[in-house]
Image (cartoon, rainbow, N blue to C red):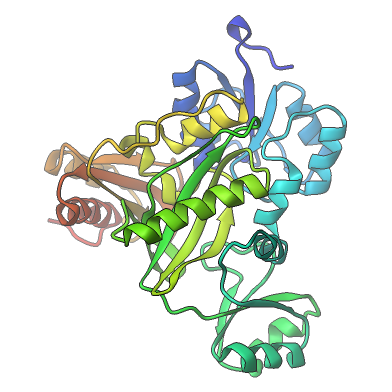
Length: 381
């Protein structure tokens, strides 16, 4: 077991990115100790979490050494080999979420099969390994078709829209199964965050709208401007998935809002970009809730702290130094909340986010957009 003051537990987070970094204030608030296994001492969380261990999540011995000092092991990404996690479980390590659940966020084909079994509404899909199978699926659902690599894709990577079989020749040539999905017409993209604890308590946040550009989330608007019955169906689907997959911790369910209802697109079994607004915008942030859930503590209140909340991602642009822009944003709008991740600025890289709250949805969104644009260097006045 981990060692901490007064017997309070130690939570170990595999991965040193910004999600682990944002768990640190939540851990302090709960009075627990957070440890991080990062690939590099310069990773986002490693800069703020004392005693960060450096090691690779692909290295079973590194995971063993890290887990030895923790009461429970959790993650800020889904890329830890499930075989390693099963070995750790057999050796007595508490892993949350467990590998059986986590596999559904690692492999999109596994996820689609299970959601179909659970009766969760999804786009029509098929596993394809040949040109003939892809051609048959395209003839059934209509072209274009969305093609995905089952593993490793995120932020638009590993996803391609193909107009015909020829557009997929290079991917098919790899000889590996692919996930083919119908291209869905939708009014907006949604996300639902849900948390579940080992004894089965679950809590869900309001449905949010996510605004994407080039496969990357740019904005999150809470609550989503969506029909009430669609919002309820989205929350119910998220709760059904969390229970059906035996999830422990926070899970994000990304969805399409269509005329006929909501369809589930992707799963992320960890805190998620679509939930950053909860730090200021919810009575319990996704990071605190994740720690509560993996420790089997009572879950917190998910009600919002304001009628409307907007979050804008700060992507790297032309400005290598963002501090002058940071000073401007705080002076221009004292109500804006800016979170920087301690990352080197590179074009297109997520280096932070801003959150605004208020009564008017349009005004709140405009304030968040202005702050993010100023930090990126898109505007200078």
